[in-house]
Image (cartoon, rainbow, N blue to C red; front, side, top):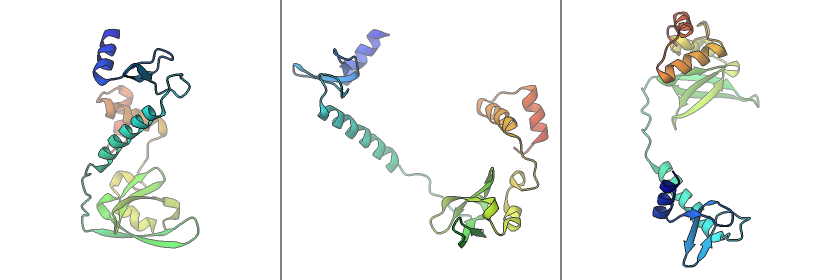
Length: 174
């Protein structure tokens, strides 16, 4: 394993610092530039180069185009009283409405960004409740935290167990 790491270090231009052992040190000519600020071979420009490289990677990842949200055209009006007591009205796409614990998550016009609204502050909750999927409605039974943990585990790993099957019969649309 040590041979492979040394080979990777040699190919990437990095190595282990001889003074502190930090990976990522570079040998430039006959000097060593380490990334560790407490090392005797510390070189501020080396950390600057590493920071710039991370920023370039981060910028290219964030500049990748995400799939644009296409509204269904069917909107619903949500009346909401915020924490300051101000009454707001949001126009949300009906197909984007979901429930997350005690919140309604919806994509709102004009930017179609996701917004999480507390159910306790929605003034027309009974109207909004009818637009939610069946499993997200107020009268639908909700699994406990332990049941949600079992459901999500088996969904994630594609496995099953007697407890999972029992919970699935209790919440078939989950």
